[in-house]
Image (cartoon, rainbow, N blue to C red):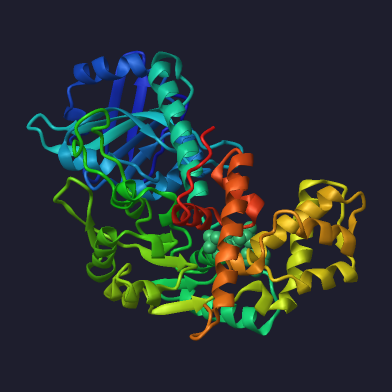
Length: 512
Ligand SMILES: Nc1ncnc2c1ncn2[C@@H]1O[C@H](COP(=O)(O)OP(=O)(O)OP(=O)(O)O)[C@@H](O)[C@H]1O
């Protein structure tokens, strides 16, 4: 050891390792019997480490530092080892386990200690060995710890495995949290119309509470975006945001997806436990999209989550506490579903505590221009060096459209117009041609009020013709697109909405 021994201190021990082994001299408090430790045992233990030990620490029976080597003290930011003397070991060495040693009298022969970085010394784990200092009769007088800074070679298989595992864990945690965090905040919900400003005001207020939120509105109006924003502005923001769309998952799988499956619940290949979305969302927010499509059996279980704050995984009797905020969304009319016996009234009322109606784009045309600007900026970001604009005539054309697919449709129309146009400035003509091809007629997808009582047979005929037209459009999109998601994009509607319409029209997914 090159460290000079520390003298003239109340709690002082001189610890010298020389070629005869270890010789410890204790003066005061707590370790007055240090010299009675059997020198031969000490010799046997410490000799092999003599060459590699670069950090040494001795504590008394109260786990106060009575000796620390100079280099070790430096590692923890102390310029003089004397600054450590008399202090509880954890105060100098975060996560030190020396107190455990003096309490239990048992050694920890090999451990890894994470050391925070210091100026000039990056944080890096140390291999540590901790031994109790005991009298002949077994009474613990203190403990000694050794740290190996650079001698990784003899321990390298363990250390490299540990470091690799640490890296993997960090990467997995990062990936997991990235995938489970809100992607949008309120500033992403663009709009300046009074309706949008009021909606955002209400949504901000909802964010501050823990109550369930129900988002109502046509497809593509921004319900999911709003759910992200509410989570991001809530006290749960640093916890997971998990989404589950009822319409995108077959009924038979939904329950497992939501509540999870206990190990061995099913015979056959997959006997392992599978966590459900409720479990993954613990502490955070669970966004249930297209809640109107939830099967009645699952609705009953969700009601229990909302009322009793508990659930059970499939095949398990263990009751799990659910600390999850539910945000539900639907483009369907829930009161009608309740009336038709397709949605539980008690669940509806439980969800309807804070309901926010997201107006369709055609009812907030003041938002059209800023949303177009935001969307065009987004397209430009993806194509460096490009800037896109919309001329006033083009805006006038857009404001006359009915927007059944709302902002999602608007996005598709602008993107299509840019593809069809040679100029970065979108004109009325380019917008018109982008509106024509696949955009379905307004009435087909709208959730506007149904025909008034007493409507004429002409109205009924019109509705039927529209349905047939919509069915054909969907069929065509499904046969021409590689996936349902791509077909939904082409049609300017949400994937969930498309699944629902496919079910209603008895259309199967293109088998490719
Ligand atoms: N106010 C807005 N400002 C900017 N972009 C918006 C706005 N509202 C919606 N969008 C964009 O429009 C698209 C559709 O929005 P979103 O998926 O949130 O709608 P939705 O109501 O949940 O649709 P669906 O009911 O079909 O699931 C997304 O790309 C979203 O980012």
